[in-house]
Every structure is written in C-alpha cells, then in structure tokens.
Image (cartoon, rainbow, N blue to C red; front, side):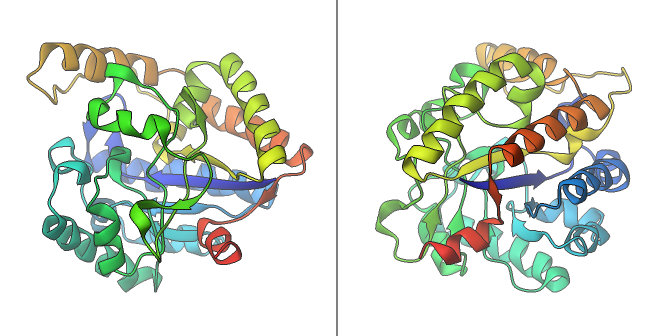
Length: 293
C-alpha cells in the first residue's frame, strides 16, 4: 500500500480567511518545524508544494524542508480565487507556472511535481504543465463533493466521475495525474480536524480499496493547520455572491478553525501511526511517478 504524504505550503491564514505576510512567517517558524519534526519521528518522506508568493516572503523555508530529505514541488504562484488556474487561459497559466518554477528552482534545484491552488484546473492546465516541464499533477480529488463550501464548485463537479487511480489526464503523454484520496469526504487535514470520527471510517474504506486495487493513498495537509489560533478571527469576504459568501467564506472558515495547532499535529500523528501499522510504504510524488511510468 503506497502512501503519498503531501503538504501545501502557502501564506493563507485560516483565522483571517486570506493570505497574510505574518502567517507566512508563522508557518516558517512554527508550522513547518512541527511538521518536519513529526515526519522525522515516523521517518517518512513527503512532498511539499510551495506557492511562489510564500517563497518570496520566506525563501529559507525551502532549505528547511529540503534539508530533511523531502521533495519540493510547486503550488502555483498566487493563492487567490481571482487567479485560479481553472479560469485562466493557457498562456496565463504558462506565465504563472514559469514565474513560480523559476523562483522555486533558484533555491531548490529542479522540481517536477505540481498541485494547483484550491485544486482548481481546466483542460489547458495539463498542456501548460507539459510546456513548463512538470511530470505530475495532484489537483483532482475524484468522488469528493464539497457542494457550495468551495469556490469553483460547479467546475469541480466533472471530477466526480474522474478515475480514482493515477492516470494521464486529457491524453497527456508526460503529465501523470495522481488524485487526492476521497470518497465524498476528502482525505485531508481539514476533514481530519473537523471530524476525527468520520475520518476513521473514511480511512478504513480507503485502506481496503488501496490494498485491493493498488491505488495509492494521497493525503493532503497544510502547515498552517499546525499553528494555534490566537482567538482573533476576522472574515474576509472573497465574493459578492451572498450564497457563496455564506458557505465558502463564513461557514467554511468556522469549520476549519477546529483542532488547530498542537491538536492538529496529534491527529496527524495518529494518521501516520495507523498507516505504518497497516504496512504503508511512504514515498514522494516524484518517486511514485518514476516507479509507475
């Protein structure tokens, strides 16, 4: 049973519901160290997808992660709903990918793994990834249904019937899609924190499926989840649509405030311990891609 631990590194503040420079510093000083220490405890590799914005603010974070033996990947440059990949043209996506990749590679060396901010891609994204020499994408979460709790939810509906195993999306010959594990609920840190109880049952199904089909388990986490909330919560409105605002901003933010900080680290510790006792073989995304050409 292959287990791919993936981490999206961005400056997004859960209590403020927006990207924030101070949050980037806290992720570097607290979130990332807690996470790499946890992975060192279990002696597992992971793939860390960085946004270009974050690297601009705290470039030393890449060395912190790379020095612990983890893979560095790209999470686009911006983490902004107005500049999501699913609403950008091919040319715009190529421009952003080159900007982010050039910046990250100037510190990390060559990278080949990509995940789109907010998991939002369109039919041009794979072509843009080919043009910028990426070999994998992990932006699709098949059979996940967030309904109105996420921006771009209508465009994500098409992924409900996407293959659950890694595949080459849109007939690409070089970019392998490695889906995030899900069954209605996604196998991610947010689900784990909101309901550890439901996560246990989701995990049971996914483990059985993986052992039966060879499909890898792909877990998504964020180092900002390892930061305690100060109790100061502001709601940044990111849409003028009142329904989208209520679900994707107001209600989603309050659910995501659960079990932050050391509680999230403890829950993640339990996830990794269970996976190891279930004979999971941990690997990076690029290692999986090379082993399954």
